[in-house]
Image 1 (spheres, helix red, strand yellow):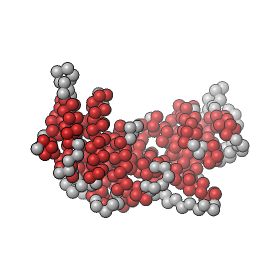
Image 2: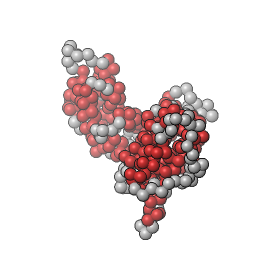
Image 3: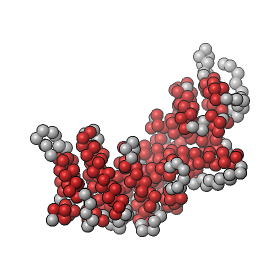
Image 4: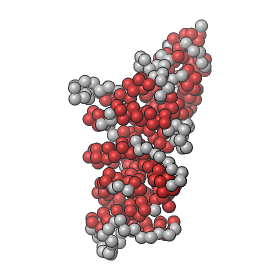
Length: 391
């Protein structure tokens, strides 16, 4: 086995990008003539993390560069043969290493690994220990001093850390069903602060952090929905309350969740948006429209925008015919949107809505109509909104 420095913090001097990538490749190339020891592999991983952290500001500023560096690690012998052991080491670095650049690299590796192997987000012990630092990272405050270049670089790293941490928390909530104990780790004051952060960062250049926090909140909403509908109970043997909905109710009419509302609409309206995110947003919209006291959460103009989105999406989904689950969710939300909100008395595109709904179940003699689609359409067509349109 070739000799290797015992200190993983020892990093060779790199003068340019080509030398950086060459050095990283050399570190990750495991000799084939000898079987490496686990200690050798551990040290190799730490050296690669150290190199990326040391030159993160110079050569890994671009997200594509950072993704490529993480891919090199994940494609190496380290992760191909010892993924769990390597993941534990990376997790340890993310939790205990005091260098923000090292934390950033480690967390990005974990996110990249999780997107390749989603089951890694279900490793309870790993994520239980990682949750507190991730939650703390999301609350990092950024203070920019235009006269101090080093400070600005540190601020940029902090900004990336908090966005990345929010993304990791979202992926955990997206993939893994949280227990009541898991949900209790999210106190009301923390969740409330997340809503405040969305408002405070609405004008920041780029929407990465803002967007990541909104995704996290809609994912947590589904977790609370599942917990409140199921048999799981808290320590007082009471059914679990959906605290996301409760906090939104408190903010009703105060203007302190306007950005959250606007961005949910934006997510539905964005063509390239992930289907899973659209489903999460639709589930929260259903709760808001169907729950007494929150049906007026959106301004009337926003509701009209939602109608436009529903008309387009339902028509497109019917034509594509490849995602009945999403189509059914839109139809389930459409009913309370038309019958419980301001649209009960405010007429907006009612004829177009009726025509679109009828088109979803027409031509049954030449095409098969899903029974659930037919039932949901008929439910929408029997609402008071349609009777007013016909009068």
